[in-house]
Image (cartoon, helix red, strand yellow):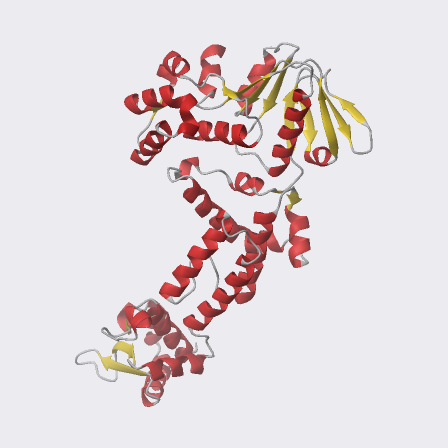
Amino acid sequence: MNYEQELLNRLLDKYEESKAFLTGVFAKRISLTAAKEDWLQKRMENPEEKRLFFAVLDELKEAGLIEYSWVKFEKYNLADKIWLTPETEAIQACYRRLGRLPAREKADKLLELIRQYRGKLDEESPMSRFLQDSERQIQRKGKIGRHFADDPVLNEDLLKCLVFMERNKGEQLERLMSSALYGDSKYFERYIKQKALSILRTLKKREQEDVSADSMPEDDALLLEKGIVRWPEILEFTGRLTVTLEDGHRIDYGAQTYGAYINSETVKHAASVTADGIRRVLFIENKANYVWYISQKPAGDELVILHGGCYSPIKGRWFRLVYEGCRRQSHAAEYLHWGDVDVGGFRMFRRLKEQIVPELAPYRMDRVSLEQYRDQAMWITSEAYLKTLEDMENDPEYEVFREVIGMMRVERIRLEQEQMIIREGE
C-alpha cells in the first residue's frame, strides 16, 4: 500500500469538509485517529508494514506536511493522532505532492461549465433556475455539489444531457440520444442516467413541494416528461377518429371499439385528425379505469382517451391534434377529465385545461363523488399535503375544485379513481 497517498488523501478529504476549508482559519486540527482507521490497523499487525508506515510519517513530518503523536507509553510502537500542518502553504504542498487538484479549482472549472451551458437555456426555465442555484451553492461552499462529479468530462456530459432534455420538444429514444450526444449508444445509461434522474427528482420536488417518496413518478415517467423513452410511446384511445398522415394516407380507427392504439412515430407524421360525430371527449388518468370504462361500451358519439398522468411532448401533440379535429366538427363537443380526487389529479386537470383544452371540465372529481365513495378514501397524514390543498382552495385556477377540496381538508381524505371501479365491479 502507498501509505503516503492514503494518508494525505484522507486528511485532505477531511480538510475539504471542514470550516478551515471555507474560512482559512484552523480552529481545529484536521486529524485522523490511527486506532479508528481499520484499513491501517489490519496492516500494523505486520512488523514490516508498521516499519514502512512509521518511515512515511517521519518523511511527511520532515517535509512539514503533517504532525503526529504516539499512544501514551507506546512511543515508537503505536501511532495515535495524525494531523495536517495547519498552514495554507502546507496544505497546497500536499495537493502538489499527490498531483491532486484542489477542491476550489475543481469547483471553479465546474462553475465555468455551468455558466457556459446555462447560456443555452431560457433564464426562466426550471433547469436554468436549478443551475443558477447550483452555481450559488458551489460558490458558497467552494466545492462541487452532490449532483455533479469530480470528473470535469463527466460533468460536461451531464450538462449536455440536461440542456438537451430541457430544449427537447419531441420524442427521443434513449440510445439514439446517447449516440447523438456522446457517440456511444450506451454511454447515457452507464454514466449519465442516474445523475440526470437525481436532478429531475429535485426539479419535481421544487415543482410540487408536497411530493413524497411514494408519490414521486417512476424513473421512466420522469424521462418521458422530457420526451426521452426506451421505445416509441404507445397512446391509447377509443372512438371514431381518422388520422391523416403527411403523405396523404388515412387511418380509420372508428371500428376499433375495444380500444385503439397509435404509436409516437405515427403521431410525429400525423398532419391532422378528423372526428366523426364526437359529442363527448373523456380523458381518463388511470389505465385501469380506462380499460374498465371502455369495457362498458361507451356511446358511439363518445371519444375516450387514456391520459396516463403527466404527458410527454408527443402525447401533448396527440391531444392537440385530437382537440383540433373535434373543434372542426359542425357541432361542439363536451370535454371532460376523470382523475384522482387528490392534488395530483387536480394538477393534471389544470395542465390539460391551460395548455390544450380550455373548455375542459372535471368528471367524477367533485364533492358528491367523494361523499359517495368516502369509505373507499385514503387518509391524508401529511401536513405539507394539507397545506398544498389549502393553497389550491384559495387559488382561482382551482375554483372548480374548491368545494371538494374543502371537504378533503376537513375530513383529511383523498380518493384514488380506481376505488370507484372496485366498488362498481363488486
